[in-house]
Length: 446
Image (cartoon, rainbow, N blue to C red; front, side, top):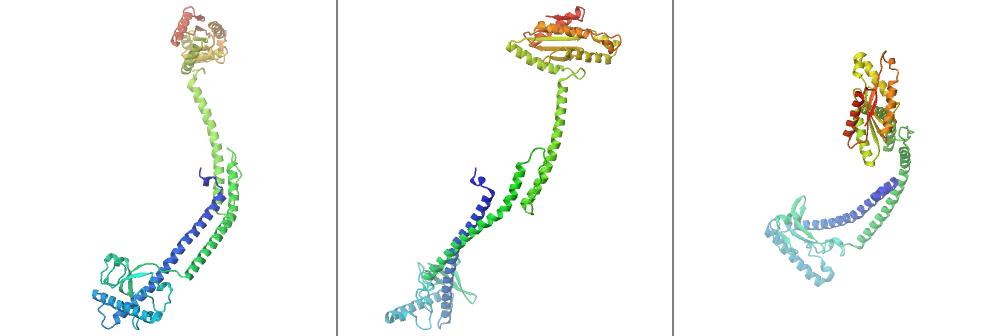
């Protein structure tokens, strides 16, 4: 699990604000020196560019100057600069420091100091070098590997800075090197870093305090909401959450109140529906294994139980008895009385037989007027005793309550556990027919 997942909401908010503040301070600390350096170099370059354009302007105003924009003009200006440089060098050797100024009426060559600047001024440094060319790209002030009169390629001109005079282009400048910093620049830089450090510390402290006090009411409301969620009980309506304000937490609380009411209503409706479904399922299940007329088990259920008990008794060596019961002269009852009387007879016989069997015995309607009884853990002698009791119970019943002159008896065929289920059914059926052939109203055992 991620460490952030284990933090409390307040810790997450505090961490988010502190990290965002720290990130902002770091961005400012990283960007500000770059901006200062960029602006410093820009100012130095612009100062040099002003000097270069002034140089070009003075050349164009000089007597005998060639048309600007040609290779000859570039070479002419280059030679003039060389002559001035040589003159300055001679004067410096002859006159010492005073000879540092060029002859009157001509500006100093680029990179050798500017008028009005003192030595040590970063804008007067020789650390910044420039290759200067005219509008057509012809070099008149070479440096590095460039030669006077060489033409800059279109890519070099695209990379170079354009020199303009009164809004019109007059040449190109390719710059290299940096302007050195003075002691004042170092002081400004140190002061800036100190200010950033103090501002960053104050921002972090303020972020912590703001986050701490802002999250207190929010966390209190969230705690109420969390307690309400944990206190929800199925089917019980929870107390509504009271939250003031119109923020997202208040909206969430109102939504929770509505959801709680809806869930309670739906839960109660679901419980009622489940109870109805359970009752219906029980009814359907009962119908699936119950005979509709007699209320006894049907043949399908009997077959399932017969498979189960036969296999278990065979495996474990337990006893199993089977009785087939048939109502004597049932067709005559239907013909002489009515089919309704026949149905009533079957229903009454089912009730009489239930009174004689045990709770774990399986009594089912096997078809028509034929019933069947499976008796697990029952010996053949015990089964015969129960069959005889059932026979007498049927014979002695007051059948005239159903129809005047009605008399009902039944025949029984018994068998015990055999090799196969088919053999048990066959033998019990044979004993039933033997009982019928012997005069009916009797019990026959194999």
